[in-house]
Amino acid sequence: MTEIKLHNSLSRKKEIFAPIDPENVRMYVCGPTVYDRAHIGNARPVVVFDVLYRLLREVYGADHVTYVRNFTDVDDKINARAAESGRSIGEITSETTQWYLDDMGALGAMEPDHMPRATQYIAQMVTMIEKLIADGFAYAHEGHVLFRVRKYDDYGKLSGRSVDDMIAGARVEVASYKEDPMDFVLWKPSDDATPGWDSPWGRGRPGWHIECSAMSYELLGASFDIHGGGNDLMFPHHENEIAQSCCANGGQSMANYWLHNEMLQVEGKKMSKSLGNFFTVRDLLDGHDGQPSVPGEVMRFVFLSTHYGKPMDWTAKKAGEAEATLRKWRTLTEGVEPSVNVPAAIVAAVADDLNTAGAITELHRLASAGEAAELLAGAQMLGLLTGELGEWARGEDLGAYEVLLADARDAAMASKDFSEVDRIKGVLVDAGVEVRMSKVGVELLPAAGFDARKLEGLL
Image (cartoon, rainbow, N blue to C red; front, side):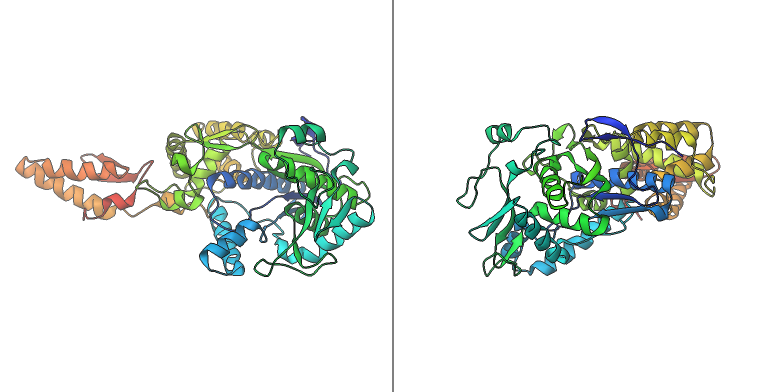
Protein backbone atom coordinates (compact mmCIF):
# COMPACT_ATOMS: atom_id res chain seq x y z
CA MET A 1 0.00 0.00 0.00
CA THR A 2 1.17 3.53 -0.79
CA GLU A 3 2.78 5.26 2.19
CA ILE A 4 1.27 8.70 2.80
CA LYS A 5 3.19 11.39 4.64
CA LEU A 6 1.51 14.55 5.94
CA HIS A 7 2.84 17.59 7.76
CA ASN A 8 1.07 17.52 11.11
CA SER A 9 0.59 21.02 12.53
CA LEU A 10 0.27 19.48 16.00
CA SER A 11 3.74 17.90 15.96
CA ARG A 12 5.22 20.43 13.50
CA LYS A 13 6.77 17.68 11.42
CA LYS A 14 6.02 15.42 8.51
CA GLU A 15 4.63 12.09 9.71
CA ILE A 16 3.65 8.80 8.15
CA PHE A 17 -0.13 8.69 8.02
CA ALA A 18 -1.57 5.75 9.95
CA PRO A 19 -5.39 5.85 10.12
CA ILE A 20 -7.21 4.72 13.24
CA ASP A 21 -9.13 2.25 11.09
CA PRO A 22 -7.97 1.70 7.47
CA GLU A 23 -11.48 0.49 6.67
CA ASN A 24 -12.94 3.81 7.85
CA VAL A 25 -10.60 6.75 7.17
CA ARG A 26 -12.18 9.98 8.44
CA MET A 27 -11.49 13.63 7.64
CA TYR A 28 -13.17 16.87 8.78
CA VAL A 29 -12.52 20.25 7.17
CA CYS A 30 -13.94 23.57 8.36
CA GLY A 31 -16.29 24.98 5.76
CA PRO A 32 -17.63 28.46 4.99
CA THR A 33 -19.82 30.90 6.85
CA VAL A 34 -22.54 31.36 4.27
CA TYR A 35 -23.41 35.03 3.93
CA ASP A 36 -21.74 36.01 0.63
CA ARG A 37 -19.80 34.73 -2.37
CA ALA A 38 -16.60 32.77 -1.69
CA HIS A 39 -13.45 34.67 -2.63
CA ILE A 40 -10.47 32.95 -4.23
CA GLY A 41 -8.71 32.67 -0.86
CA ASN A 42 -11.68 30.67 0.43
CA ALA A 43 -11.28 28.32 -2.52
CA ARG A 44 -7.70 27.30 -1.77
CA PRO A 45 -8.47 24.92 1.14
CA VAL A 46 -11.34 23.44 -0.85
CA VAL A 47 -8.96 22.44 -3.65
CA VAL A 48 -6.21 21.33 -1.24
CA PHE A 49 -8.43 19.00 0.75
CA ASP A 50 -10.21 17.81 -2.36
CA VAL A 51 -6.84 16.49 -3.54
CA LEU A 52 -6.27 14.81 -0.17
CA TYR A 53 -9.74 13.27 -0.39
CA ARG A 54 -8.92 11.93 -3.86
CA LEU A 55 -5.60 10.53 -2.59
CA LEU A 56 -7.24 8.77 0.35
CA ARG A 57 -9.86 7.27 -1.96
CA GLU A 58 -7.12 6.13 -4.34
CA VAL A 59 -5.14 4.44 -1.56
CA TYR A 60 -7.85 3.09 0.77
CA GLY A 61 -10.80 2.78 -1.63
CA ALA A 62 -13.71 5.15 -2.17
CA ASP A 63 -15.98 3.15 0.16
CA HIS A 64 -13.53 3.43 3.05
CA VAL A 65 -13.16 7.22 3.28
CA THR A 66 -15.55 9.68 4.92
CA TYR A 67 -15.11 13.40 4.32
CA VAL A 68 -17.11 15.98 6.28
CA ARG A 69 -17.14 19.73 5.56
CA ASN A 70 -19.61 21.92 7.42
CA PHE A 71 -21.61 25.04 6.67
CA THR A 72 -21.80 27.71 9.37
CA ASP A 73 -25.32 29.05 8.91
CA VAL A 74 -25.72 30.81 12.27
CA ASP A 75 -23.35 33.73 12.72
CA ASP A 76 -23.35 37.45 13.46
CA LYS A 77 -22.19 38.23 9.89
CA ILE A 78 -25.27 36.45 8.57
CA ASN A 79 -27.47 38.34 11.05
CA ALA A 80 -25.97 41.65 9.91
CA ARG A 81 -26.46 40.79 6.23
CA ALA A 82 -30.12 39.97 6.91
CA ALA A 83 -30.63 43.23 8.80
CA GLU A 84 -29.08 45.39 6.09
CA SER A 85 -30.79 43.62 3.19
CA GLY A 86 -34.22 43.07 4.70
CA ARG A 87 -34.12 39.42 3.63
CA SER A 88 -34.64 36.45 5.92
CA ILE A 89 -31.66 34.57 7.31
CA GLY A 90 -32.96 31.31 5.85
CA GLU A 91 -33.23 32.86 2.38
CA ILE A 92 -29.69 34.26 2.57
CA THR A 93 -28.05 31.06 3.84
CA SER A 94 -29.92 28.88 1.34
CA GLU A 95 -28.86 31.07 -1.57
CA THR A 96 -25.23 31.49 -0.51
CA THR A 97 -24.85 27.78 0.29
CA GLN A 98 -25.87 26.93 -3.28
CA TRP A 99 -23.56 29.63 -4.63
CA TYR A 100 -20.71 28.00 -2.74
CA LEU A 101 -21.49 24.51 -4.02
CA ASP A 102 -21.80 25.77 -7.61
CA ASP A 103 -18.57 27.75 -7.47
CA MET A 104 -16.53 24.98 -5.83
CA GLY A 105 -17.99 22.50 -8.30
CA ALA A 106 -16.72 24.74 -11.10
CA LEU A 107 -13.23 24.23 -9.64
CA GLY A 108 -13.64 20.47 -9.91
CA ALA A 109 -14.07 19.87 -6.18
CA MET A 110 -15.94 16.70 -5.30
CA GLU A 111 -18.73 17.16 -2.78
CA PRO A 112 -17.87 15.71 0.66
CA ASP A 113 -19.77 12.71 1.99
CA HIS A 114 -21.47 14.91 4.60
CA MET A 115 -22.09 18.66 4.55
CA PRO A 116 -23.81 19.39 7.88
CA ARG A 117 -25.29 22.77 8.67
CA ALA A 118 -24.74 24.16 12.14
CA THR A 119 -28.45 24.85 12.66
CA GLN A 120 -29.16 21.13 12.22
CA TYR A 121 -27.00 20.24 15.24
CA ILE A 122 -28.07 22.72 17.92
CA ALA A 123 -29.33 19.92 20.20
CA GLN A 124 -25.98 18.11 20.00
CA MET A 125 -24.16 21.34 20.83
CA VAL A 126 -26.36 21.89 23.89
CA THR A 127 -25.66 18.33 25.05
CA MET A 128 -21.90 18.82 24.69
CA ILE A 129 -22.04 22.14 26.55
CA GLU A 130 -24.03 20.52 29.39
CA LYS A 131 -21.32 17.85 29.70
CA LEU A 132 -18.58 20.48 29.86
CA ILE A 133 -20.44 22.35 32.62
CA ALA A 134 -21.07 19.13 34.58
CA ASP A 135 -17.37 18.25 34.47
CA GLY A 136 -16.25 21.73 35.53
CA PHE A 137 -14.75 22.78 32.21
CA ALA A 138 -17.40 25.41 31.50
CA TYR A 139 -19.69 27.77 33.44
CA ALA A 140 -22.85 29.76 32.86
CA HIS A 141 -23.09 33.46 33.70
CA GLU A 142 -25.44 36.23 32.54
CA GLY A 143 -27.02 34.04 29.86
CA HIS A 144 -23.61 33.06 28.47
CA VAL A 145 -21.74 29.80 28.78
CA LEU A 146 -17.94 29.95 28.64
CA PHE A 147 -15.13 27.43 28.49
CA ARG A 148 -12.51 27.61 31.25
CA VAL A 149 -9.33 27.74 29.20
CA ARG A 150 -6.99 27.28 32.17
CA LYS A 151 -8.72 24.01 33.08
CA TYR A 152 -7.28 22.42 29.94
CA ASP A 153 -3.56 21.96 30.46
CA ASP A 154 -2.71 21.45 26.77
CA TYR A 155 -4.35 24.66 25.59
CA GLY A 156 -2.00 26.35 23.12
CA LYS A 157 -0.28 23.14 22.03
CA LEU A 158 -1.50 23.46 18.44
CA SER A 159 -0.56 27.12 17.97
CA GLY A 160 2.57 26.81 20.14
CA ARG A 161 1.73 29.64 22.52
CA SER A 162 1.09 29.77 26.24
CA VAL A 163 -2.10 31.27 27.63
CA ASP A 164 -0.20 34.13 29.24
CA ASP A 165 1.58 34.92 25.96
CA MET A 166 -1.76 34.94 24.16
CA ILE A 167 -3.17 37.46 26.64
CA ALA A 168 -0.08 39.66 26.34
CA GLY A 169 0.05 39.59 22.56
CA ALA A 170 -3.59 39.68 21.51
CA ARG A 171 -6.74 41.69 21.92
CA VAL A 172 -8.74 39.64 24.38
CA GLU A 173 -12.30 40.56 25.15
CA VAL A 174 -12.78 41.49 28.80
CA ALA A 175 -16.41 41.05 29.79
CA SER A 176 -18.38 40.97 33.04
CA TYR A 177 -19.57 37.43 32.36
CA LYS A 178 -16.01 36.03 32.07
CA GLU A 179 -14.02 34.54 34.93
CA ASP A 180 -10.84 34.88 32.87
CA PRO A 181 -10.16 37.05 29.79
CA MET A 182 -9.10 33.97 27.78
CA ASP A 183 -12.32 32.03 28.37
CA PHE A 184 -14.28 31.65 25.15
CA VAL A 185 -18.01 31.57 24.44
CA LEU A 186 -19.87 28.29 23.98
CA TRP A 187 -23.36 29.83 24.13
CA LYS A 188 -24.64 33.41 24.05
CA PRO A 189 -28.06 35.01 24.52
CA SER A 190 -30.24 36.13 21.62
CA ASP A 191 -32.61 39.06 21.55
CA ASP A 192 -35.95 39.04 19.74
CA ALA A 193 -34.36 40.16 16.46
CA THR A 194 -31.64 37.49 16.53
CA PRO A 195 -31.97 33.76 15.77
CA GLY A 196 -32.17 31.73 18.94
CA TRP A 197 -33.00 28.34 20.42
CA ASP A 198 -34.26 27.33 23.85
CA SER A 199 -31.58 26.01 26.18
CA PRO A 200 -30.97 25.48 29.93
CA TRP A 201 -29.35 28.94 29.92
CA GLY A 202 -32.18 30.74 28.19
CA ARG A 203 -32.93 31.53 24.57
CA GLY A 204 -29.68 31.88 22.67
CA ARG A 205 -27.36 30.58 19.98
CA PRO A 206 -24.06 28.71 19.92
CA GLY A 207 -20.60 30.21 19.76
CA TRP A 208 -18.62 29.53 16.60
CA HIS A 209 -16.20 26.92 17.94
CA ILE A 210 -18.65 24.48 19.51
CA GLU A 211 -20.40 23.70 16.24
CA CYS A 212 -17.45 21.86 14.67
CA SER A 213 -16.83 19.84 17.83
CA ALA A 214 -20.45 18.72 17.99
CA MET A 215 -20.80 17.94 14.29
CA SER A 216 -17.51 16.07 13.98
CA TYR A 217 -18.39 14.01 17.07
CA GLU A 218 -21.77 13.06 15.65
CA LEU A 219 -20.51 12.20 12.17
CA LEU A 220 -16.97 10.90 12.77
CA GLY A 221 -16.77 9.96 16.45
CA ALA A 222 -14.79 11.31 19.40
CA SER A 223 -11.46 10.66 17.64
CA PHE A 224 -10.86 10.72 13.91
CA ASP A 225 -7.92 10.89 11.55
CA ILE A 226 -7.54 14.30 9.87
CA HIS A 227 -8.78 17.81 10.62
CA GLY A 228 -8.00 20.53 8.11
CA GLY A 229 -8.47 24.16 7.22
CA GLY A 230 -6.64 27.38 6.48
CA ASN A 231 -3.86 28.40 8.85
CA ASP A 232 -5.91 31.42 9.88
CA LEU A 233 -8.14 28.93 11.74
CA MET A 234 -5.33 27.44 13.81
CA PHE A 235 -5.93 29.98 16.55
CA PRO A 236 -8.36 30.44 18.08
CA HIS A 237 -10.82 28.21 16.21
CA HIS A 238 -8.94 24.92 16.04
CA GLU A 239 -7.26 25.48 19.40
CA ASN A 240 -10.68 25.91 20.96
CA GLU A 241 -12.11 22.91 19.14
CA ILE A 242 -9.39 20.69 20.56
CA ALA A 243 -9.90 21.97 24.09
CA GLN A 244 -13.65 21.56 24.23
CA SER A 245 -13.68 18.23 22.35
CA CYS A 246 -10.99 16.60 24.46
CA CYS A 247 -12.62 17.77 27.69
CA ALA A 248 -16.11 16.69 26.59
CA ASN A 249 -14.90 13.28 25.42
CA GLY A 250 -12.93 12.11 28.43
CA GLY A 251 -9.53 13.28 27.24
CA GLN A 252 -9.60 11.50 23.87
CA SER A 253 -7.69 13.32 21.16
CA MET A 254 -9.97 15.00 18.65
CA ALA A 255 -7.92 14.40 15.48
CA ASN A 256 -4.55 12.75 15.07
CA TYR A 257 -3.37 14.84 12.12
CA TRP A 258 -3.96 18.57 11.70
CA LEU A 259 -3.31 20.10 8.26
CA HIS A 260 -3.32 23.81 7.48
CA ASN A 261 -2.89 25.51 4.14
CA GLU A 262 -1.12 28.84 3.82
CA MET A 263 -2.85 31.99 2.65
CA LEU A 264 -3.29 33.43 -0.84
CA GLN A 265 -2.06 36.72 -2.27
CA VAL A 266 -2.97 38.48 -5.51
CA GLU A 267 -0.16 39.84 -7.70
CA GLY A 268 2.23 39.79 -4.74
CA LYS A 269 -0.04 41.66 -2.33
CA LYS A 270 -2.49 40.67 0.38
CA MET A 271 -5.96 40.45 -1.08
CA SER A 272 -7.94 43.51 -0.06
CA LYS A 273 -10.95 45.41 -1.35
CA SER A 274 -9.12 48.67 -0.69
CA LEU A 275 -6.33 47.59 -3.06
CA GLY A 276 -8.80 46.57 -5.74
CA ASN A 277 -7.43 43.01 -5.87
CA PHE A 278 -10.26 41.27 -4.06
CA PHE A 279 -11.97 38.74 -6.33
CA THR A 280 -14.62 36.13 -5.72
CA VAL A 281 -14.49 32.83 -7.53
CA ARG A 282 -17.57 33.92 -9.47
CA ASP A 283 -15.83 37.17 -10.51
CA LEU A 284 -13.13 35.13 -12.21
CA LEU A 285 -15.50 32.54 -13.68
CA ASP A 286 -17.70 35.20 -15.26
CA GLY A 287 -15.04 37.81 -16.04
CA HIS A 288 -14.93 41.12 -14.19
CA ASP A 289 -13.96 44.74 -14.80
CA GLY A 290 -13.44 44.07 -18.48
CA GLN A 291 -11.19 41.08 -17.84
CA PRO A 292 -11.76 37.75 -19.63
CA SER A 293 -13.28 34.88 -17.68
CA VAL A 294 -10.97 32.38 -16.02
CA PRO A 295 -12.17 28.77 -16.30
CA GLY A 296 -12.46 26.80 -13.06
CA GLU A 297 -9.96 24.23 -14.30
CA VAL A 298 -7.41 26.99 -14.85
CA MET A 299 -7.92 28.26 -11.30
CA ARG A 300 -7.48 24.74 -9.98
CA PHE A 301 -4.23 24.30 -11.93
CA VAL A 302 -2.83 27.55 -10.54
CA PHE A 303 -3.74 26.53 -6.98
CA LEU A 304 -2.07 23.14 -7.37
CA SER A 305 1.11 24.63 -8.82
CA THR A 306 2.14 25.82 -5.33
CA HIS A 307 2.53 23.52 -2.32
CA TYR A 308 -0.33 23.99 0.12
CA GLY A 309 2.08 24.77 2.96
CA LYS A 310 3.51 27.80 1.14
CA PRO A 311 1.88 31.18 0.49
CA MET A 312 0.33 31.22 -2.97
CA ASP A 313 0.43 34.20 -5.31
CA TRP A 314 -2.42 34.42 -7.80
CA THR A 315 -1.33 36.29 -10.92
CA ALA A 316 -2.83 36.85 -14.35
CA LYS A 317 0.43 35.56 -15.83
CA LYS A 318 0.10 32.23 -14.00
CA ALA A 319 -3.51 31.92 -15.12
CA GLY A 320 -2.52 32.51 -18.75
CA GLU A 321 0.27 29.94 -18.57
CA ALA A 322 -2.05 27.42 -16.93
CA GLU A 323 -4.68 27.94 -19.62
CA ALA A 324 -2.13 27.40 -22.39
CA THR A 325 -0.84 24.21 -20.73
CA LEU A 326 -4.31 22.79 -20.23
CA ARG A 327 -5.27 23.50 -23.84
CA LYS A 328 -2.20 21.56 -25.02
CA TRP A 329 -2.91 18.66 -22.67
CA ARG A 330 -6.56 18.49 -23.70
CA THR A 331 -5.54 18.41 -27.36
CA LEU A 332 -3.01 15.65 -26.65
CA THR A 333 -5.52 13.52 -24.73
CA GLU A 334 -8.55 14.09 -26.98
CA GLY A 335 -10.21 10.75 -27.71
CA VAL A 336 -7.80 8.91 -25.39
CA GLU A 337 -8.89 6.60 -22.55
CA PRO A 338 -6.93 7.07 -19.30
CA SER A 339 -4.58 4.28 -18.30
CA VAL A 340 -6.09 1.83 -15.83
CA ASN A 341 -3.60 2.74 -13.12
CA VAL A 342 -2.52 6.21 -12.10
CA PRO A 343 1.22 6.57 -12.80
CA ALA A 344 3.19 5.63 -9.68
CA ALA A 345 5.24 8.84 -9.81
CA ILE A 346 2.05 10.93 -9.62
CA VAL A 347 0.68 8.98 -6.66
CA ALA A 348 4.06 9.15 -4.92
CA ALA A 349 4.27 12.92 -5.34
CA VAL A 350 0.78 13.53 -3.97
CA ALA A 351 1.37 11.03 -1.15
CA ASP A 352 4.43 13.05 -0.11
CA ASP A 353 2.55 15.71 1.83
CA LEU A 354 0.38 16.64 -1.14
CA ASN A 355 3.25 17.68 -3.39
CA THR A 356 0.96 18.75 -6.18
CA ALA A 357 3.64 20.95 -7.73
CA GLY A 358 5.81 17.86 -8.07
CA ALA A 359 2.91 15.93 -9.55
CA ILE A 360 2.39 18.67 -12.16
CA THR A 361 6.07 18.50 -13.07
CA GLU A 362 5.58 14.79 -13.75
CA LEU A 363 2.50 15.57 -15.85
CA HIS A 364 4.64 17.90 -17.99
CA ARG A 365 7.12 15.04 -18.47
CA LEU A 366 4.38 12.65 -19.54
CA ALA A 367 3.01 15.23 -21.98
CA SER A 368 6.46 15.83 -23.47
CA ALA A 369 6.91 12.07 -23.88
CA GLY A 370 3.52 11.80 -25.61
CA GLU A 371 2.23 9.38 -22.99
CA ALA A 372 -1.35 10.59 -23.31
CA ALA A 373 -3.13 7.78 -21.45
CA GLU A 374 -0.82 8.11 -18.44
CA LEU A 375 -1.07 11.90 -18.57
CA LEU A 376 -4.85 11.70 -18.50
CA ALA A 377 -4.95 9.24 -15.59
CA GLY A 378 -2.50 11.28 -13.54
CA ALA A 379 -4.22 14.58 -14.28
CA GLN A 380 -7.63 13.19 -13.39
CA MET A 381 -6.35 12.05 -10.00
CA LEU A 382 -5.60 15.74 -9.39
CA GLY A 383 -9.05 16.70 -10.65
CA LEU A 384 -7.75 18.03 -13.99
CA LEU A 385 -8.67 17.06 -17.57
CA THR A 386 -12.00 15.66 -16.43
CA GLY A 387 -14.98 15.69 -18.75
CA GLU A 388 -16.94 17.87 -16.34
CA LEU A 389 -14.36 20.66 -16.49
CA GLY A 390 -13.66 20.52 -20.21
CA GLU A 391 -16.41 22.69 -21.67
CA TRP A 392 -14.28 25.84 -21.52
CA ALA A 393 -11.54 24.28 -23.67
CA ARG A 394 -14.02 23.38 -26.39
CA GLY A 395 -14.77 27.06 -26.41
CA GLU A 396 -16.89 28.89 -28.93
CA ASP A 397 -17.35 27.62 -32.48
CA LEU A 398 -15.07 29.87 -34.51
CA GLY A 399 -16.12 28.43 -37.86
CA ALA A 400 -18.07 31.52 -38.91
CA TYR A 401 -15.06 33.72 -38.18
CA GLU A 402 -12.84 31.39 -40.21
CA VAL A 403 -15.19 31.83 -43.19
CA LEU A 404 -15.23 35.61 -42.65
CA LEU A 405 -11.43 35.84 -42.65
CA ALA A 406 -11.05 33.44 -45.59
CA ASP A 407 -13.51 35.47 -47.68
CA ALA A 408 -11.72 38.69 -46.77
CA ARG A 409 -8.39 37.16 -47.77
CA ASP A 410 -9.77 36.01 -51.14
CA ALA A 411 -11.09 39.51 -51.81
CA ALA A 412 -7.76 41.02 -50.80
CA MET A 413 -5.84 38.73 -53.12
CA ALA A 414 -7.88 40.14 -55.99
CA SER A 415 -7.84 43.81 -54.93
CA LYS A 416 -4.36 43.81 -53.34
CA ASP A 417 -5.90 45.73 -50.42
CA PHE A 418 -5.31 43.76 -47.23
CA SER A 419 -6.60 46.38 -44.79
CA GLU A 420 -9.81 44.45 -44.06
CA VAL A 421 -7.85 41.25 -43.49
CA ASP A 422 -5.58 43.08 -41.06
CA ARG A 423 -8.58 44.58 -39.27
CA ILE A 424 -10.29 41.21 -38.78
CA LYS A 425 -7.05 39.57 -37.70
CA GLY A 426 -6.47 42.38 -35.20
CA VAL A 427 -9.89 41.86 -33.59
CA LEU A 428 -9.36 38.11 -33.41
CA VAL A 429 -5.91 38.36 -31.87
CA ASP A 430 -7.11 40.96 -29.37
CA ALA A 431 -9.85 38.51 -28.34
CA GLY A 432 -7.25 35.82 -27.64
CA VAL A 433 -7.61 33.84 -30.87
CA GLU A 434 -4.62 32.19 -32.50
CA VAL A 435 -4.82 32.87 -36.25
CA ARG A 436 -3.28 30.33 -38.61
CA MET A 437 -3.36 31.18 -42.31
CA SER A 438 -1.84 29.00 -45.02
CA LYS A 439 -2.39 28.07 -48.66
CA VAL A 440 -4.74 25.34 -47.43
CA GLY A 441 -7.05 27.73 -45.61
CA VAL A 442 -7.70 29.58 -42.36
CA GLU A 443 -7.71 27.98 -38.90
CA LEU A 444 -8.69 29.81 -35.71
CA LEU A 445 -7.93 28.42 -32.25
CA PRO A 446 -8.87 29.84 -28.84
CA ALA A 447 -5.65 30.73 -26.99
CA ALA A 448 -4.81 31.83 -23.45
CA GLY A 449 -7.06 34.70 -22.40
CA PHE A 450 -9.68 34.01 -25.08
CA ASP A 451 -12.60 36.39 -24.57
CA ALA A 452 -15.58 35.81 -26.88
CA ARG A 453 -17.11 39.11 -25.82
CA LYS A 454 -14.48 40.95 -27.88
CA LEU A 455 -15.76 39.29 -31.05
CA GLU A 456 -19.19 40.89 -30.74
CA GLY A 457 -20.06 42.88 -33.86
CA LEU A 458 -17.37 41.27 -36.02
CA LEU A 459 -19.83 39.12 -37.99
